[in-house]
Length: 69
Image 1 (cartoon, one colour):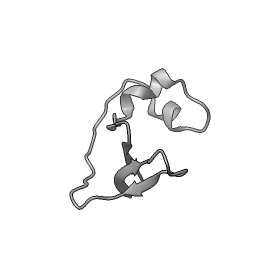
Image 2 (tube, rainbow, N blue to C red; image 1 turned 90 degrees about the vertical axis):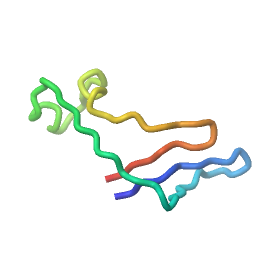
Image 3 (cartoon, one colour; image 1 turned 90 degrees about the horizontal axis):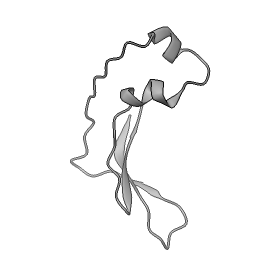
Image 4 (tube, rainbow, N blue to C red; image 1 turned 120 degrees about the horizontal axis):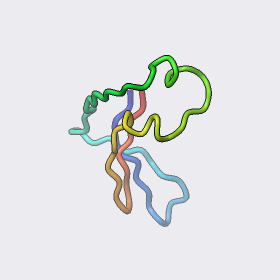
């Protein structure tokens, strides 16, 4: 599990992951009427089927929140 921020500097060719002492992982519970077997199986899915299940992460001009499981 990784929680932090992806930071980039215009003079630096690669972004870097920065973790601050107070970074935390929030829990988002999402509900849908879509068939779970369908959305969790292999294959491509329409963005409209999954969008409500994905939390919005903050983004600014020089950083973005990241979460990896």
